[in-house]
Image 1 (cartoon, rainbow, N blue to C red):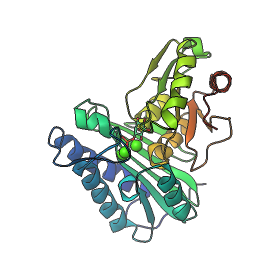
Image 2 (cartoon, helix red, strand yellow):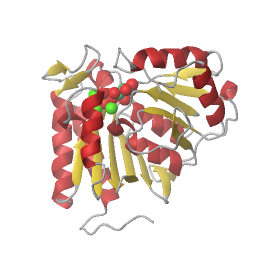
Image 3 (tube, protein in one colour):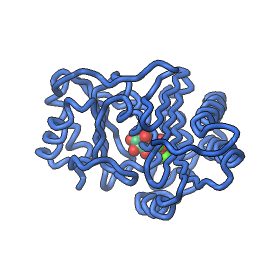
Length: 281
Ligand code: IPD
Ligand code: CA
Ligand code: CA
Ligand code: CA
């Protein structure tokens, strides 16, 4: 049962408000980046717009829910170890908001029109609200635990594809060149021989939203952070899909090596990754 949060607005309404306000502002800053920095590597970017959007979202959340905790990407030091530590410090909070102000920063910086705002709310470690907003296409994806998932108010459902050979899959070129990318490349090579086609739009959250709405039948990536996927995972499960780690264990906050599908191709995808030694585990 979704717990009730006392306040003038429901948490879902606040999440939608945050995502759409931040999304509109991010879109207005396309091509107008003032500060571009790298984090761990030349592939790991951050801009003044990522930071500004996260601040905007934090302020709005705290106006309505001053006692809630917030885990936002740009408040955490770069790298996997810092991300794992930051999550472990707040994962037992009663209410925890998990915020990725821009998922797809590389796209944003290059003017490639695929990025989004991703906001999730977890209650005692379980995600109960997930909102993803793509300001370029003005697409709003909303999921509430136990209540289904919607794209602009229309019920979202995963695809019906029954095998990899009938499926388009989404994959990611992770910015972690040392560990994650080589593993992902093994998976990508193995999958490319099995599936109808592969797609990589450069946003983990949008990939998950696309699994939820049946635009792709699955998504695989090793080396993800909680803010990349928390909202999207709920979208997929509330749309009838399945999410696990790359060994097939059920998703929980903190899973970094992720497989999300329509359910029907899940076992085949897991087997292909395992045979290719591409689980990252
Ligand atoms: C990244 C994107 C990308 C994925 C990376 C993420 P960011 O998030 O989701 O698609 O491959 O693993 O780090 O840095 O743009 O928020
Ligand atoms: Ca980033
Ligand atoms: Ca991200
Ligand atoms: Ca980000």
